Length: 332
Image (tube, rainbow, N blue to C red):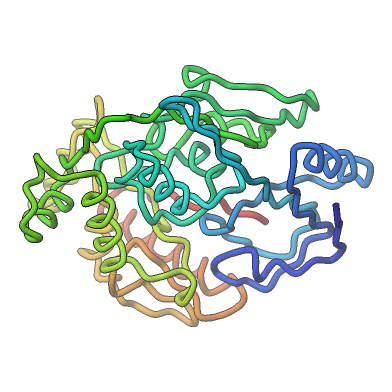
């Protein structure tokens, strides 16, 4: 195990921000993770965990230790798949399809690692990863021991989980319960419309066709983080109760919204576009012309990005009376 000091993190975050951390370790196993935890504690440094860095924003130099989870491995047990947290998410989805295991196809091409999926409860096109997770193996930073958390312990909700509320868990492995029959979810309107346009009956679509369609849709509306520095959606969609929804509809009569359990989900992209921010540039940061939830940075420092993000938040609050929250994890 190699530990690097005063390590530059520009290659470990998709914005490419040029900040350093005190200590850095790429851990290839649980034993290496535990060893680096002990190393950081001895030096009195807070530990933060990275996967592929596609849903994090590093705000400044970090007086901390950074642990990169890089363990690998996949194992099929009937309809269950045990997969290491360091595996690439999209490659894992494609691998499940090649092995005739279905359910994750709506989540194709989401950037990041497998370990990040339950933390964020990633979701797209009518599906959330929590539907298919049976358990998550973790290392508890407080107890210095390995635990297995069952699905009913993970407190999943919209883009959230127990890991967002309790930062002392490090995800090392995820067990998925998948389908051996090709049941697909084509309920999401944009996906359904795309299949129809492609002369595919949504009711008869195969998982492979859904996967291919999701990939093409994502490519058409989201800039590639490898060539265009971004973290995907910078803001969460908004959840409102009935009363607040009615207040917002008075200001925006054509507002689209969707039922989300006992609340209503509001597409934040719609608010940002209505407020005139799509394509707008401030300093070296801009709102994507492809998708208004995506902020793009053309610099290697974060100042202009947060200046733009905060101006959008303030404007949406002033115009519509709702609070936007950042979707990526902010490290500072």
